[in-house]
Image (cartoon, rainbow, N blue to C red; front, side, top):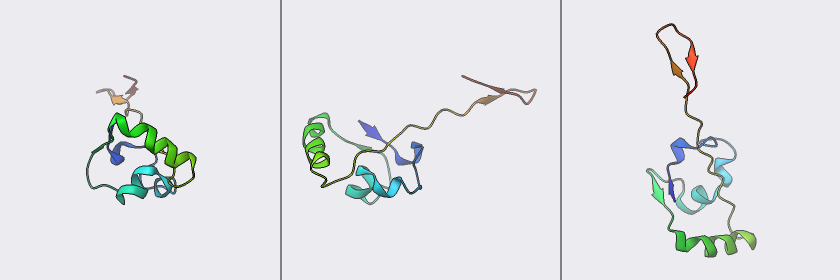
Length: 74
């Protein structure tokens, strides 16, 4: 899974401070990739309360603005 924190709805909010990526990487300066084989170990750490859950939520694409000035949904 590729994660770019700047594309997350939680970016720079109080939720960002308690996210798996921020806790482990303080937050990353660029996109990070979490390998699929880490899912199980990360889930175990989260279940034990040792690390927070991944709170990444992709931002919804912004609507396109037409020449007439009205917004269109993609």
